[in-house]
Image (cartoon, rainbow, N blue to C red; front, top):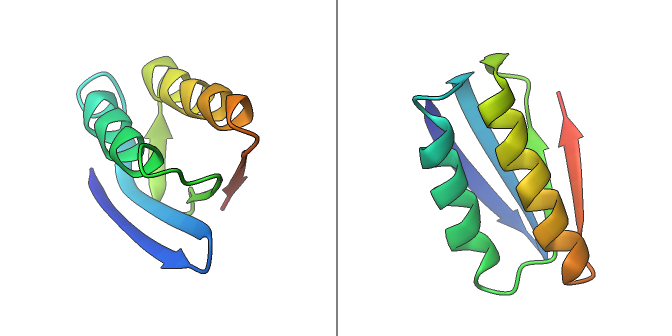
Length: 79
């Protein structure tokens, strides 16, 4: 999996590529948490280049959503 991001104003757009599964979900989680720790409240995850997502990957997205909502933020998935 490859990860890239782009900050547009106060919105972070994250673009994972490839598979998000048990082997790569920890990398995605660390990537997202490192960016959320800076106080980010608006996140878009562009899923257009994701070939497969397992329950481990879905858990990371759900955890991210809960963290954002707890801080008054929002998560949008696109593709």
